[in-house]
Amino acid sequence: KRSAEEIKLFAYSIVHDLKNPVFFIHGLARRLAQHCRDSLDEKGKDYCRRILSGSEQIAALVDQIYTYISAKESPLVIERIALKDVLKTIRDEFSHRLRERHVEWYESETAPEIQADRISLVRILRNLVENALKYGGEGLTKIQIGYKDDGDFHVISVRDDGVGLQDSDAEKIFGLFVRTKESKGLEGAGLGLAIVKELARQHKGRVWTESAKGRGATFFVSLPKTPQI
Image 1 (spheres, rainbow, N blue to C red):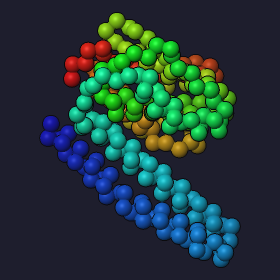
Image 2 (image 1 turned 90 degrees about the vertical axis):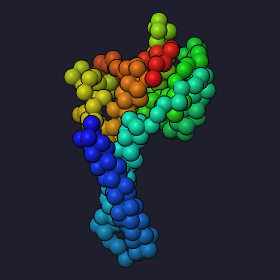
Image 3 (image 1 turned 60 degrees about the horizontal axis):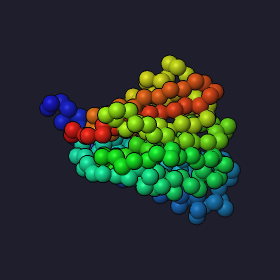
Image 4 (image 1 turned 30 degrees about the horizontal axis):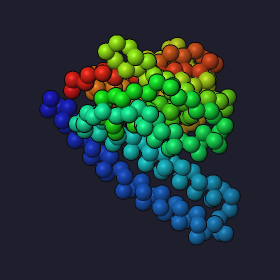
């Protein structure tokens, strides 16, 4: 227990200590690109772009680490939530990107009230939709949100028709900082699905995936109808 507390404190410290210098580097690189663009050659401009991109990736990683820690530490506030309202929030949030990439959005006609932590449920669905958009590939044309009543559990699914996953990746992708071959060259820290898994675990639920390479992927999250937190 003492070791876990020390690790948690260390992680918070890293997150806090990294943020300021990263923003400082990003700000200076942006100023350099703006104020010295006429005197920089193409190589200098490329260096500025790389510094900006690298610092943005570090900042995103820091934010994801903080989100993961928060997911483990923040107490859940269980309330009755209309699933259709949560789906509207997610749909509105991604509407621009969906239109831009010509991706169709489909929802289950069944969307009951669920007892869960609202912030957690929004974060779970946001991460799964983000995952589909990020890793679905250029052939992605639709994202479908499904619902199934599975006895004592609500099961929500996020299905896409993108590139799918290797069978060997189906379990490990929920680990910390995991990056698959399909994610090579894409931004991301490999924490989005780990956060989904942690939030499902806190609700005494679980998350899993079914996929076939080239035929899309479906992620499932089960949440108990009567939470016992």
